[in-house]
Length: 591
Figure 1 (cartoon, rainbow, N blue to C red):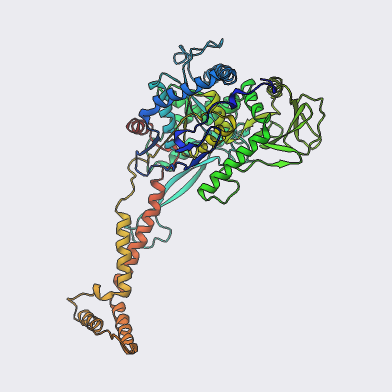
Figure 2 (cartoon, rainbow, N blue to C red; figure 1 turned 60 degrees about the vertical axis):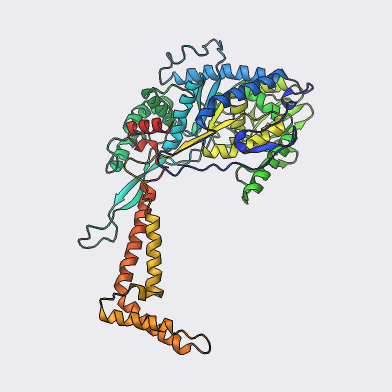
């Protein structure tokens, strides 16, 4: 679509996704009022599925109907979605088949020649990590929703995020460090033990973080099994790592190996989904076309993007300018775009800036870069920056130039909100988010409605809480702690309540204290009375010293138990620590 043509993507009526719980005042206006609060379930096997699972088919049908109406308003979205989906399904099938069988699953799906059976696409996504079971529950729900709706399930591996931690934490139970004598009744203390699967290194995107220590990676499972053995007999890391060792030999990238191993394990569980890394999904003309829609109106896009982020921060009382996303900047005529760029020789993520000069868009990671206007290919400037020029008068040509510029040294990747906007508007018909993505995509809904002028597709938020077998929070501990704290205060300030009436000395002290309380002066000087009370309180405190010591010990024990419980009952433990059968049974109960 050339720049001179009207853009049908910006002419449709506006609305907002149900998950935002907002409403539109008029077409083209921003959502107002409130954002939904999304919280992780606290109960074991508790789920957060909003809207509910039984509404998934209706959400999908509504999204399809809305998309169809918008397609009838113009050819832009129809053409973009059709081309993008043919590429997506073909690439996802090819990628998935490199490490697991897809022949039977894809027999009735889009073929390698691009034939399309028009089945809707349900999509989810996450970083390639050893995440907690609540995240994996989303993958379980993905294939269930797709099966119920006769849709194609595709999981997006978010491999452009930074690979920070290259380890997992394994819970441990140890005797107290200060245990003395034969105190065998002392409770074991919970602690964390970090188990790395690779050496630490630069903070690089997952797709660039090559394995640094293959031997450490290959023996990760044995270290995990040894540490978790007192709590779990058969963690699924054993089955997972059989696939992981094969995957790391294929790709040499830790994140890639983790994702492929987990997906291969899903095949063992008969979960039927396709998978594709984001870095593969955004190659080619469809994503470049989507990017040029934004670049061609970058000033307006920046206004919408920044205003939406400001609104989100103001609504939630967030002071940090970096949360949930930083505002896009402007510098000497250069406009920041929510994209990353990196390459094999410069693997660190760098921001992307654009500037229009005449009939050319200049695209660079360095706003001060001086460019050769005749260059339509990316190149490295003297200072090591990457730059590119594309047409500013023909959007289709510009998208082609941008797509053709892709190379091992020029990897253009979307940032978080850009990723989900492309996934929801172009690649899928229903997107399943986790809690974090569900929160932030309420911000994306505002941007979609205001910039593109179309109805944000409904999404579904899915998460759950699973704890290690046999580990359950003590529901009575908090009440017991409150009772002990009350007792401790009374022992200090109202000790007469705890004196033993069968002990003559303590009974005498109690009677004296009660008598003094009955004789509290109502007026005049109370100095003598206060002195008498203080003297009695000191005597009572001596009598109750053993009870106070025992109460403090009980409180300390409860606090230690609570600290251990927070570790053993954490919902954030990696799924690879759990027995596979236990997880499958849990998922089946949850959805």
